[in-house]
Image (tube, rainbow, N blue to C red):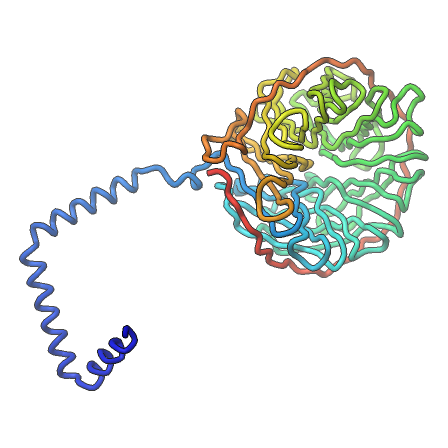
Length: 495
């Protein structure tokens, strides 16, 4: 009926122009008559509209536009996870990890850029037909990003380091693999003051043992300035490098007892202080009779270092977080174990604007589910200021090896959630205020729940080690992939 009437009206106007003109004149006359007769009432309506517009302009912006805290999941039908998060120069947030829901292979790089309010600006996959996984992302001085991870699609061996330089919009500026015939992983990357990069990971193709730490100093275009292994006849690996406060680099990893002193445990934290040319200035191990593993190290305000590890040497439960603060020479200033009756781990520690530190990881000692994300803040003396879990009924973890610290003292943590999101597991990002809180939410199960972990002093001594470094001589290989848009499902949990 509607389409028939519409056709009838259209045909009348088309075939009878004089009728159309007369109807138009009558409608204009009637409209002006209505406006004149109701001019007083219309003036009142216009005044009301003006007042409403003024009030609307004065009202606060929507919650998402002024949010200083948020939580969101990002992913697809299968498993997706974040292993790194970085602060972008525009005060946005960049997440990096892997996706099995999108891309060209079994696992591809997945990078998601969020704006300052935590809303997605762009999301792309990068990869080939095999496995690619991001381990580290950092903002660069030109406003872009440097990305480090590994690939099985490209390169010389089974796994190769894969380093990709991106613009601020995710476009690829250069991409290269680094490796030998066996396995190499890139675990952490930093931009150096000269515009180049320092990247660390581990290698099975080169060095003195089964796995050695591998360090590469790159120029701004990805070409190699120097490359070295550090290790002994056993197993060594690393997940963290930082530009040291004075000069050179601090590298945090772990080594097993085949390389360390007989008094050490099965696996100890191993720190290396390197000069600008990669020469070892000092090397020390830290640990007790059990196993210690470290994924993160940070500079302190005093010019020393702090690392957050996990340990079963000093525990109240199975594994505890172990935080150790050092001076510039690697000597221990204080050391503390923190945890509950189960497993508690830290994967990142970040220095805050007030010179305190926030550690993030996961726990099954506290919280709502199997694993919950666990975040706590300590002051410069190691005293706990606040501690909270975030999670649902399944496994949730803040297992990113980095956090994003904002000028207002807030922090973004990232990882993986099975309790929320679109698929088996999703990338998970939570931006907290400086006191560790999210504002009131309609979904209270994701809000921080206070915990009461036991904190105790530990009493180990830093031990000098004497492992050697060797030069390596690989030539990087260019790769040729293009970003692919990832239609991820973005679910805002707050606000």
